[in-house]
Length: 308
Image (cartoon, rainbow, N blue to C red; front, side):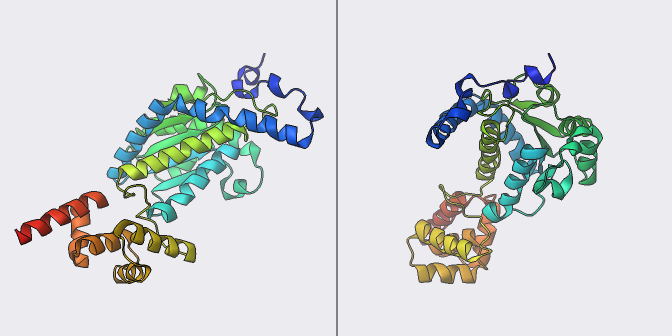
C-alpha cells in the first residue's frame, strides 16, 4: 500500500459508489449530504485554530505578516483569502500574503509539477524576506506536498511560527509545524477530488484565521467592518451605511462625515458620535490602539469630564 492509499482524503466513499447512476437532483443531494459533515469537522479543531489566531495577532501587533503557502486548490484558496484582506479590513498590501507553487500562472491553469520541489517552497519565502516574527501557514489537503514541506522547514529554521492546515490526521506537515489544524472530513464524493469537502474545510478555516485575527486587532466595531477601504461604488455605499448604522445619522450626514475624514470610516463614526475634531479623533484612535469601541468610550468620558 502506498502512502497515498493510506490518506483519509484519498479513500473511496461508500455512500457515493452509485453516484454515476443517479439522476441529477440525486447527485446534488449526495454532494449536499457530504458537505454537511464539513462544519462539524472544523468545529473539532477550533482550539487549534484559536492557537493559530493568537499567534497571528501577535505577529500583526509586531508589524509582521501572515503568509499562506500552498499548491493547487490549497494555494489558490490561500491567495484568495490574502487578496481579500486589504479591501475588507483596510490593511496594507503585504500584511497577508498568499504564495502558490508555480506563481501567478498557477492561479488560472494547472501547474501541478511545481509542487514537487521542496526547494521552491523555501525559495518563495526567502524571496519575500521571511522573518522570525512572521507566521507561515502551510496548506495541503494531503499534508505531504513537497513545496509546502520545504517552506515550513525553512520557516522553522528562520524561527517563524509555523501552522499546518491539512485534512489528514498525523500528516507530514502536521509533524513539522508548531500548530497543526487537521479537520477530517473523510473521503470525497469523487475519490481524490479534494477541491470538494477538503477545499471547503480549508476555506472555512482560512476565513476564521483572518477574520478572527482582524477582529482581535480592532478592525471591527460590533459586527461591522469599520476599517474597510471604500475603493468602489459598492464599498462607498457600504461605508455610508456603516456610518449610519453606528451613529443613527442620515445618509447625507454620513456622506459629509466621510468627506471630512477622507473616507476613513472609523474617524467618520468617531467624530459623529463624540463631536471631536478630526485630529483629536485621530489621536484618540491611536491611543485606543485602533479599537473604535474604546475610542468612543474614552471620548465620551473626556466629554463628561469637561462638562463636570
